[in-house]
Image 1 (cartoon, one colour):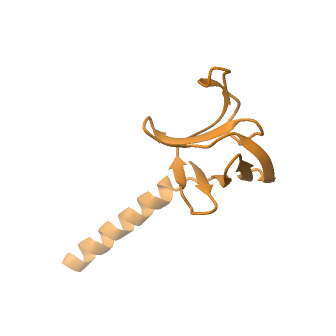
Image 2: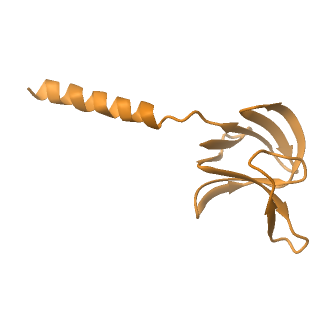
Length: 106
């Protein structure tokens, strides 16, 4: 999972897909250049076909670590990160809640 968050207001997207997009001269999507922010490319994080956040082109990389990038675009500053997988944790919590509920009902 990936998270893209605009720093000034926290707006953004959490999603399964992340791509750095190079634009064609006619303004349409071109090639993707990996899943991390890169200067000159736009970032998109998608949860589904119609649920996404798309930035303008990255102008500056402020901080870059393996799971986190802080960057600026033409009009905003963003944080991009790889989120730890939580599916097992969520499943464990749901199982625990169900067990506790069953115990209370007995």
